[in-house]
Length: 492
Length: 112
Image 1 (spheres, rainbow over the protein chains, first blue to last red):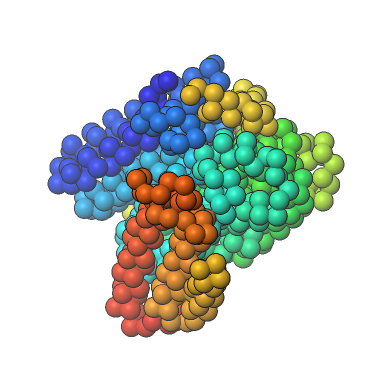
Image 2 (cartoon, each protein chain N blue to C red):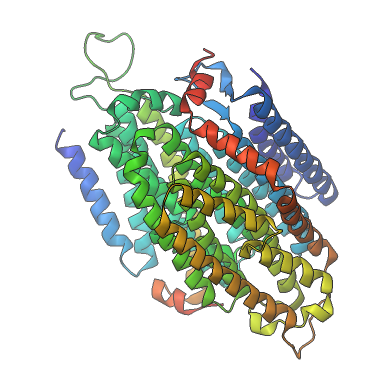
């Protein structure tokens, strides 16, 4: 038993509390933020490598053995998401120092940001369904506060939407937890998997599975429940938009994959058509929404809805190849979308607006920005050497192997739209003439993190093979739930 | 009790849903809190045994007793729900001060 598994939750939690105490010492705060971010990156990467070599890890908090205590479990999938999360988060943290104007804002922002980070890491690691609820609430609470931190009117409107969504989804989550607890008498996910298996086709189990799709779908913005996402992701402060689209909507996807590959394994076939249909509609609706927007951040937010559809399509195949493709898609999309949102923030700082018609000429003002932005655009559009090509290629290959022709056809058509609206946005921002000169010059501290993420997505394209192998290994592990169950229940 | 609790849950969810569909922002808050409490009652019933006793040792241990775990869970859920509701109320107050309205449709009209 190693304490390594608890560190990704404990370090950010401790940092957040310390940051609140150090509210009036800007220099000490900066150092603390830097050191803890680096520590989390080191811990997460070493955790992933431990899981890679040593199999699924489990940790009993407080020393209470499996079905009774709260268990933390790290398998390859959660390890990958932890590392992805810290890559995006460290860029967002660095970005936020230049993005936020006043010191008071920074003080609150960073404390809340680390609470958010702790909640995200916690949701990936927990092995207990009620603990998952608590971690979700930590994430949601920090987002409520982070979203409305700058107190713009748009943010308050989005805040009301987000909190209504959050309260409704927590109520549904509690009903689902109550249902499954009344049925199985346990909350440990591995124990649930064992106890539910003989009764997989009991109507109550199907009802609870449906509720979980509703709850997690609401968080991941699956089609009929995507209404809140464009407002929230477009009005949040930019580093938070990058976190939201890059990693937080994937928390919902993670939870759906986790429950369907562990507790409701036998129901996969029943829900397949349902999930694939919703995924196809999500892709289409998101892309149509993105085409109609004039605000760059709203284009990106609708595009996130559309991309979530792709990820759910991979999940809906319920095959090792499909899920592997979905996991690679999560990694690749997270990096690209975070880079694009940070690019939008760079523009916002220059002209104070997000309307694309007020921007232009970036090609002349900063060719480097135009190039980095173009890498992101081509990557998400799926142009070959970038990682975006491989994420779509893997997904569509998995779809064709499983003979799911209709979703694959939708995916291909929608990817044309994706390329269209992204190139159009790039053109408006970088090529079109703009009479007005920008109010401020380009801030290199903002350009840096965006560039790092853009280059990373390109590198991921050239070195796709090892990452795809890792994603497939994670998917393989998810399809052998007995490994997970043994890791949790075995070491009593 | 067997009929009473499901009835209470039903009434809480139904009136919560009705309130959410209203245009007044305060009714939205009340509706969400009613739905939250409905969910809490659902969770309580999941540990409920027909004629169960209080789960305290030293009583008549031959009788079935109520599962105490859901009650602990509900306590957590109530605290979390309370925090989120308080935040939502502050935001509503902010909306009222900025826009002088409690109508959700008016907030939507005020883009930007």
